[in-house]
Length: 357
Ligand code: PHE
Image (cartoon, rainbow, N blue to C red; front, side, top):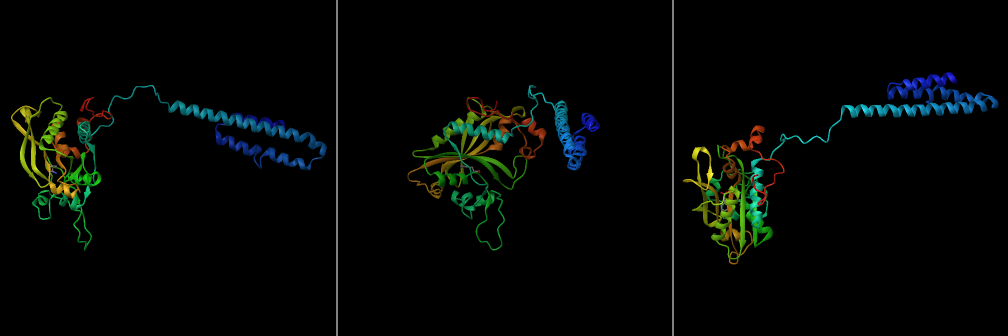
């Protein structure tokens, strides 16, 4: 019995790892272990012998089991110490100053525009990018034969063989969200609708997908004067200048009457754009008073309500404000470009905290 005890206690003390320890447990106190076999022999002993050997064997079994448990604990403590030694991390180190990711100029400018219009009481509305032909065209007073449909280089969705309904389109502008907002909320209404739009066009200033923000205000006694004030406030706030000169040029859109395209005074001296000075004019948006037919399409009575609307190219004003020369690079996902033109995350634009820094 003493030999067994010495043999196992020494082996347990020397065990190199948990699997060696498990082998020892099986060899000593497992079902067919040496001590278990000895215990089975108790049955063949005389009652006197059994009275001596029984407690001794039980005590030995207990001693080996607790040696096994203690060793197991020691081994797992050692394993943990080893992990802590190799996997340590100093959480008191300051954060890495190097920027890991950045906010795309389109996201930045969308946030800036949203902050400016939120300050003037405009809510944000959204609509689908795959739009019904009716919302994108007819409801906006662009009937089937209208040349504006061809001019827009529309992408049409696939239509099943034999389906006579007009195919859905990738929306060519954010104006259909005007209709959806009217349908949803009725008048009065004050919304901006930022989002992606699509036209089949590709060069230095055109990409097949780009971004617009639509504005729509409907109320009683709204006029061009309100439109002009809102746009001037917007342009000043966006370009972060005190004064800016706008030029309202008579234009035509089927969904507004009268219509105006808006240019801002700027200079290109030395190749960089300066807003508010110089002799050049730069077109930045289309606008006008909402056409009565458009109000009717949105279930709003044109005898009681008027409104103004405008559409701005987000990518375009991003290029202007941040001096980005080629629109195509916006959508190349080139990390060098994003690091150069991107904005720090968590630097949320607000009117009072500053828009762009
Ligand atoms: N939807 C027009 C465009 O994409 C812009 C616009 C919007 C013009 C609202 C007038 C009013 O060119």
